[in-house]
Structure formats: C-alpha cells, structure tokens
Picture (tube, rainbow, N blue to C red):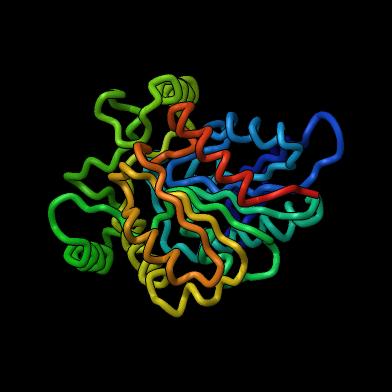
Length: 299
C-alpha cells in the first residue's frame, strides 16, 4: 500500500506498507534503502520477507525515488544535513509504522540507510528490537585523494555557496546507467538488468550524482558514527553483513564499528559486491540464512 506523508519542511515522502496475504503477521521489518534507491528496487526483498509472514515498511528518502526532490536538477542527490533524513525517519516511524506494526520490530538497512539506521538507534532508542545492516556506510572509498583532503575541499566549496552544485569530475553516477561489466554493485546480471529496466521505464526514479552539500553532510555524519563512544549508545542486538568485494564503502570500517558495539555480530560475505540484497542467488541465500538465524522465531 503506497502513501505519502509531509515532512517538517513541507516535502512529500513516499512510503510503502506490505502485509502477508495469508495468516497473521509474525513481526515487522522496516527497510531503509541506500543512496539513490527506491521502493521498487526492493520488491524481491519484500517478497522474501512476506514469505516469512513479516509486515514490511519502507520509504523513499527525500531527494530519491518518488519523494520530493531537493534541487531544480531532479536527478541530483542533495541534502543539507543528514539530520533531515533522521527527522523524516522519526516521523515515519512514529506516524506510519508504530500505529500499524506487529511486534517484534526489526530494522533491515543498507549502506546509507544502514548509516542512518545506526544514528537512529543511538539517538532514538526503544523502538526496534533487532537490526540487520548490510554494507553500512561507516567510511566511503575515495578514488585518488585521501578522504580528509576531499572533506576539506568539499567544506570549502559549500562555504563558497556551491552546496547545491554537482561535484564535477567524479564517477559517482548511478551505475545502473552503465554496463554490467563495469558495475561495482552486484555480480547478478539478471538483477542488474532488472534495476536498469526500472529506471528506463520510470526516469523519475533516477538519482544520479551527488552535490557538494550532500557529500559534506555525509562526512559530517560519518564523523559522528566513527566516534568510539557513539557505538556504546546502541544496546540492542545488531547483525552487520559486509561485502567481501565492496568498492563503495569500507568493510574494514564496518568490522571496526562492530567491535565497538556492545551486542553485535559481524559477518563478511566473501565474493559479494556492495549491494548484497541485489547479489547472485547463492550470495543472497547465504545472507538470508544469516538473517533468519539472527532474527530467530518471530511472533
């Protein structure tokens, strides 16, 4: 069931709710997608969770999918602060999820969504019972110059008024617009072509490159998550599944964060690229075994 809600600053955020067709739901899963993703991309994951008799909730982040875009250039990924994402998520949880959910509540979050999920768990505890994070954005891989240099240059650009400008000379474009052979996201050609087809059939779903403002906001938020005292605020059980062949975010940083969390399990999924839930069948099956073992019996 699709719907929209309005944010504190007047944007329209699209969300989806799915219920099992047979029997009573045995729990609820909130999917938090990564940068540039959208509800339709998670159809297969939603189907897998419905087969487990779980209710599913998800949303298109501001500036993505069919939610309100943030700049005149609709395909540009932009946000002034990750705090805006968190305010949207909190409103979604309080107004949409909580009144309709069936306990236990589980977070399933990917990449940027996993980063935001961690911040939500630390700053607004008490709603989720468990969290499963795939390829969490703790540190991003930067091509060429070190991250500290890029962060400094981005801060200067934003200070000069270029916050909503596209970062030039980068390859940070939606890789589903390129060739399968060159992509860093998935080893599954079938799922690659399916996701490319979604963008071809509905160009309004596309989020492409990011702005200087988005990247500054990302560096600012990653600095929060990488403080050792941050992890101590997350007490619930957390499963982190990192990709063994991740060229987008650092799996080593994810392992380090897991060692700081009071109640965590870390697994490196060898052979997987960044988008574990869009990977080849054998890798997805290994992920779901980890997921089901961690979640345990629902209801």
